[in-house]
Structure formats: structure tokens, C-alpha cells
Image 1 (cartoon, rainbow, N blue to C red):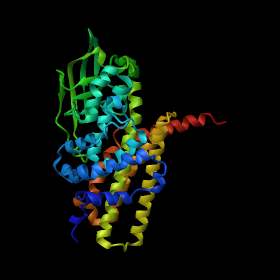
Image 2: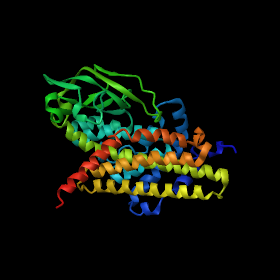
Image 3: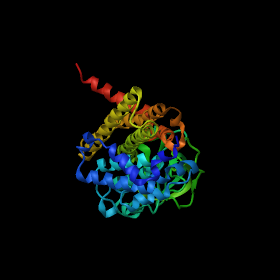
Image 4: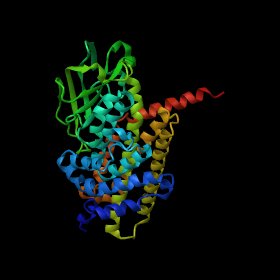
Length: 407
């Protein structure tokens, strides 16, 4: 058979029809009218502006600028931000369904898309009104790219081990150190940098700063070559005597750990939504390919495998929506609950992609179908925003503490 017609990304109408078919009434029943409107708008933009270029981004490693700009023009970059900063004041559930749509169309674009929110959110929750008005609107309208500077060569999931230092000086701080594996780090104009003002204090010394990417002393490495997410750049950042004004501290000195912990709630919703979106993309591409190969006459083994995938994706979607709704309700969401969502949904993205490739046999390896791209893109979601091993540790510790209350 000719596999070229299976590249449904190039036909916006066919793309929307397939994804409309994959919507599950069981999950949709809990969405508000506005949340369904956000999903429909995002799906339309993705079908026209994002999905058609996904394969080319993966092949050429070009940056996903055009797709991100299209999402920004549609007003989708500021879903959880107030209107006075250029946002739309929507729910975390609306953001989650939008993230799922973007990830299903192009995971690399979704990584840039979510990083804009991740850079803006700490300024919103811990910055002054002046800082927020100065930096957040540009991140939401896509006129400037942002980055979150946490990970270091010797401090990844253990944020308390940061070696980047911010030494108090007259009028501000002198920043020195380096960061690695920083999404959009090579082109970020706004960097949320976490550094320690006193290494002996451990977590209590961590402080968050807004760093302008154009300041003297800010350096960048070349983007890394990666397994997947080729349309999103990942690079090192270097800080050599960067002078940070005192009013660019987020919160107060030593409150950086609290900023990190507040921010990871949003970032882990992002990663979980990516996992669900990638699982759905792999499943949808597999359905389309099997229809082209066999019509509606599938083997029992294929039918059973597809049924299992559909059920697992629905479970992941329900979990994602439920935790995001809990965050919207301002209920106390524990690190274990956030961890379950992140771990389960990102594991789903990877394992569903592996299973989809298996169902397709030799066709699963063809780049034109995009299933192998889902597999490569999904792997890193299990690693960033707190590795899934760390999530299991948090979940397990929370469960162990619950046991202490039993007789």
C-alpha cells in the first residue's frame, strides 16, 4: 500500500474529524462549555498551523516558532493568567485540554508552548505588580521566549543541591553559575533563575530571580541533539557576574524553594497533558493506518489491543482532569496526588506509543505515520518536571506517612 495518504497532519479537515472521533463522552461530561470551546479552538489552530509542520520540525530540528506564534495569536498562551496581563482567566482544566491538543499535534511545539507558561507563572505568583506587567505580557503574546533555570550538572531533581550562587551586593545580587537541559535556553529573553544566597542554608538559601536574557554576563550553549522533541531547543545557560537588581527577586531571599514547589503543580499538569496527548496521537494514527491497511476487518488481537489502549487513554484523561479540577477548586493537593497524575499520564504516553508501534508491526517504524515520533517524544516527559522515579518516591513516602496514623 502507499503510506503517504496516512499523513493526516497535512489535511486539517481530516485531522479534526479523526480527533473529534477520539473524544470520549465520559470525560467530556465533566467539562464546562468554556472548556470545550477552548479545546475546539485549540484543535482548529493545531490542525491548521501546528500539525502540518510537525514532521518537518522533527526532520530538520527547526524551532517551532510559527506554531507557537499561531497559538499566541489565538489567545491560548495565557489561559491561566489574569486578563490585565494578557491572559484569559481560564481554568487549569481548560489549560490541560489545550495542552493535550497541542501535544497530540506536535509534542515539540507543546513543549515550547508550556515553557512560556512555566516562565510566566513564577512572576505572577511571587513577583511584584511591576515585574508582572513588565515581563508576563510578552511571554503570553509570544513576543519574547522564556526559560526556567533550575537544573544544573550536579543538581537535577534535588533542587536543594544548587551550586549557582547569588551574592548580595549594593543594589542587588551578583549571579554566577550554570544551568543545563534548559528548554528554550538558547533564545530566552526572560529567564527565571534559581540560585542560592547561602549554600550552608540548603533549601532555605534558594532564591528565585527574573533575569533578562540580554543582560551582560548571560551566556548560552549550543542546543543539544536529542532523541525527540526536535522542534524545541534545549541548551546550557551560563551566568558570569550577572548583576541582578534587587527588585528582580521573586518573593524574598530564601523563598525560592516555595516558588519551585508552587510552580511544579502547573508544570506537572503540563507534562501529564503531554502524556495523554501523545498517547491519543499514537492511538489515532494507528487507527488510521489500520483502516488504510485492512479496512474495518481487524484481527481479534488488533481489536483487543486497541480496546486496551482506548481504555487506558480514557483513564489517563480522567485522572488529568480530576487533579486539574482539584487545583482549580483550591483544595489541598498533595505532592503525592500531583505525582500520581504526572507519573501515570507520562508513563501512558510512552507505553501507549510502544504498544501502537507494536500493533502496526513494520509500519510502526515508518516516519510518515508519526507513531515512532510519538514514542521518541514521549520518553523525555517521564524525565523532566521531576523524574517518574522521583514521583514514585513522593507517592510512596506519602503512603507511608498515612500508615503512621493507623493503629
